[in-house]
Amino acid sequence: MLEPPQRGSMWRFGFDVPVNYNDMSNYCGGKENQWTTQKGRCGVCGDPFQGPRDHEDGGIYATGIIGRTYESGTTINTTIDITANHFGYFEFRLCPLDMGHSRRPRRLTQQCLDQYLLKIGPSDSKSNGDDTRYYLPHGNKSYFYVPVELPVEINSCEHCVLQWKYHAGNTWGKDQQGRKCLGCADQQEEFYNCADIAIVERSPNELITPIYNDNSTTTRNRAESYLSKKPISSSSVIFLGIASVIAAKRDPNLDREVQEWIEAIIGEKFPDTPYEDAIKDGVILCKLMNKLQPNAIPKYATSGGSFKLRENISLFQNAARDYGIAEAELFQSIDLFEKRNIPQVTRCLFAVAREARKHKFNGPLLASTMSQANTRESVGGK
Image (tube, rainbow, N blue to C red):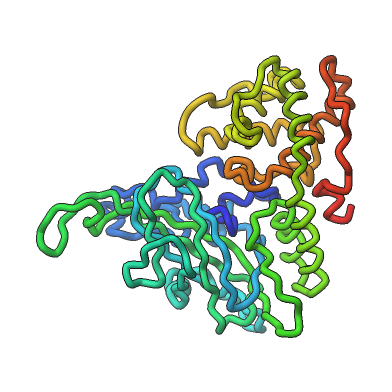
C-alpha cells in the first residue's frame, strides 16, 4: 500500500525511518507458513505470526509517525502496487489507537481492526454484492486506485491504523458443486499492510477541498509534512490548491530542452516515443547519473518486471541526492512510472543540470534555467 504509505514503505516518501527494501513481502511468511504451520494465523501487518513482528508495536518499522491526515467521513483514495496480479480481493479496516482522550491509547490488535471494516467507494471493481471488498479485475495492471470510505462516527483520531488485506485468488480448489476452479480454495496467499494516519473533524465552516484526490507530488509531499503536524484550516487547503495548480503546469519546451541535454550527455537518442515513456523505466536516468558521476549507480536493471524497473528510479533518486539534489526537488518514483506528474520530473532534471555546473562537469551543460517559482522547495515556502 503506497497511499497512504504503509509502515515499511514510508522511507520511499522521504520520511526519516528505517529502510525496508522488502516492503512488498508482508505475506505472513508465505502460504505454507500461514496455513500449515500457523493454522491460518498471521501478524496484523503481514509479518509471520511466529515473528519477528517488525511492523507491529515495538518493531523496527512501527515508528508511530503519521503518514497522512484525513477528514472524518470522507472518501480517501488509496494506491496499491501489485507486482503480480493474483486476482482475489482487497479489504480495508481501521483501528483507532488514540482518540485524544485521557485514557491510555490502545494496542493494535485484529479485534480492534475488525470493529471498522470499511466500505469501498465507486470503482472499477465488481463488488459481487459485497461493498467492503474490491475484487481485482484480470489483466496486467500494476497499480490499483481504490476509494475507501472513512467512518463518520470517528470524528477525530490522533493516531489510527489503516489495515490493507489482500486475499489472493490464484490457488485452485472446488466450488459448491464440487467442480475445480481457480480461486476456489479457502487457503489462499494473503498480504497485509498497516498505515499510520490521523483523522480530523470535518467542519462545515471550513473550505472543503479534496486534498489527496489529485496525485500531484507537490501536493502530497507538502500535505504529509504540513498536515501531520497542524490541523486543517481553510488557509492550508487554499495553499495546497495553489501548489496543485503549480504542479499541474507543463511546458513541452522545457521537456525538449532536458531531453536534448540528456541525449548529448549519454551519447544516444531517445526512442521515438513521448519523453515520459522514454525515461519511465529509469534506465536513461541511471545512464545520465553515471555520466555525470562515474559509477554513481554500479548496477541497474535493463529488463524485467515493473517492480524491478521501478527500482531504477529509486537508484537514480539516491544518486541524485548524493550529487546534491535537495529532497524538495526530487519526485516520487510512482509518479514517473505512472506518468502522473511529469513537470516535477523535468524540474528535478533541471536541478541535476544545475548541480552539474556546480560540479564543473566537463561536458554539455543545460543553458536554460528553470524558474525557481516552480520548484517544490519554493512552493514549500522556503
